[in-house]
Amino acid sequence: MTSERRSSHVSVGHVFLDSPLIIASGTWPHEAGFWKAPVCSGASAACTKALTLHAREGNPGIRLWETPCGLLNSIGLQNQGIDRFLSEDLPKISAKDLKVIANVAMETEEETEAVLSRLSRFSELLAAVELNISCPNVDAGGMAWGSDPRQAARAIRLARQNWKGPLWAKLTPQCAEISLVAKASEEAGADALVVANTWLGMAIDTSSEKPVFKRCVAGLSGPAVFPLALRLVWEVSSSVGIPVIGCGGISKSDDVISMMLAGASAVEIGTLHFADLSCFRKLQEGILEHLAAKGYSSPMELIGRGKRKDV
Ligand SMILES: Cc1cc2nc3c(=O)[nH]c(=O)nc-3n(C[C@H](O)[C@H](O)[C@H](O)COP(=O)(O)O)c2cc1C
Image (cartoon, rainbow, N blue to C red; front, side, top):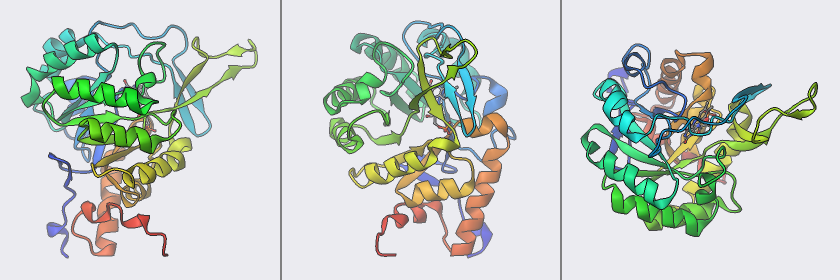
């Protein structure tokens, strides 16, 4: 197989992507320069910051805290509200080199309906909606929707009624049995599942002897969570027929390959690019090298290949 014939394209249902690398929600600025090569080279799409009906200031106090192998965040869905996103940000970021995936924070049913019906007017500019039923950093809504199969199904049904394009559900690790939430989401009409959002953790400041974050707990991302996320991807992709997008702690091309071997059709990456903006290009090179070494023509040949237990 010559390198010219080897492609890095993947499809997530009906969403066709130039590479399996998607930039995770909340980690990429809504600024034109970030959505154009060479800054984003190697990545195929980016998720917006979580969108809500009304503007939100986010959580007070410290919002980011580095840990030896990861990052705790307590941003709290800070955003300028859907109307300003549509009038100010979307024109800047659409029709560039990255496809736009709108991350919609599941709030009340009425608020979420309003956000989705506004997004529907711009559906030709959006590759998919990623319904965030997994935010760990808010008191109301957020991951409460994604931690119970019936609530998750209710959220997806509502979204399905108000958004006709590709609908991805972003799941939370904070649930008793993620495969049940995954199956309920599939039955309710999700086209793909993003596995998963951050893991609840905390930090205590030993000088003040108080929790670092005002809400005490926060979401952990980065390399520390990779093996945990990989296990969830393997479990979810074994339970549903729709595509799975792996997310959590990816820091090298072997991690992307492992996620795909475990059953992911694509991956999302956040914390890694805070330290290295050229990571997408390096990850893509690593994937192509692996494909060449194995004689595969496409990364899609990796999907689910590592599930076998007979090795
Ligand atoms: C600073 C920060 C903000 C985030 N904001 C959002 C968000 O608005 N919506 C969402 O679904 N996930 C959000 N996330 C979670 C990421 O999209 C991703 O699921 C998580 O960081 C795990 O991937 P990673 O280990 O590659 O960073 C955020 C993560 C970080 C670090």
